[in-house]
Image 1 (cartoon, rainbow, N blue to C red):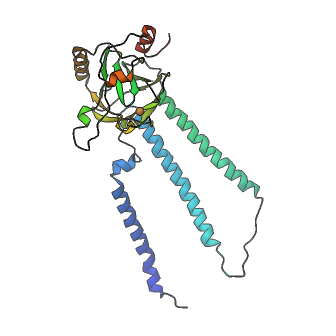
Image 2: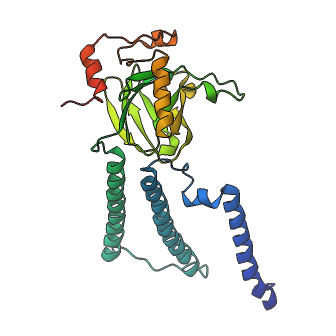
Image 3: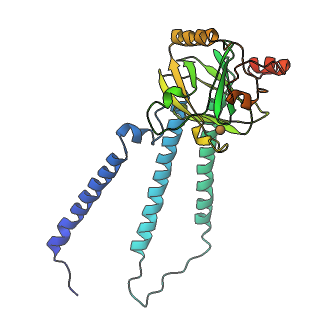
Length: 304
Ligand SMILES: [Cu+2]
């Protein structure tokens, strides 16, 4: 059989390695910037809680890759080192290796336990409503838009579903939630009809809005800017048009916006008994159907 002369083999390995490194670098650079890679392709965080989510996510990938490389390496080693060397060979037969069996039972349990503990820690931080918030906003989901009741400022804003034209300018017409930067805001989430989910991707957390249930979480936005908000629960025909914007602004600009809403006659709040059809038809009144419920929601949905 013909064999490569030695000199061909000698340059082959470095050439293959260099090729692999080049392809790897090309793939990574095509996949995004180093910032994107550093945060594991999550959106850029814009809230206090975001860092915890990003480090958990990235840490999990690093741990998973380390385990993966070890496992792939061992597999490759077995395949190469213990390959059949001639047709007559039958490999050594093994069974009942108790130490190995204990090892591959205990190690995954330890890994899952570590993930579980870290997950609970991260989630506790995300879901904590122990702190007294500086603002409370009731966000009501409805097919297919959003109403914002700024409970701390006693004004509201009511949205209509986006009309996706495929052209610029749609964003300007979206309902806009204003938040003061570096202040802790509590979201009191309710729904007027079906299950929706309140999601601002750059806050790196979301929570369902369930009819008859009040869900809550708190966010401290840390960067002034405009962010996209979406419904993250398939809620009907125009789910994809259930969009909003978040404007994180300085306190004085926030106060200006609250005053503007009050001046526009949007005082008080739209309660959960409000019929979405009336909203769709543009009625702007504040209903007083269930004063007790109103009072309860205005305290952030808390019993005390
Ligand atoms: Cu929805």
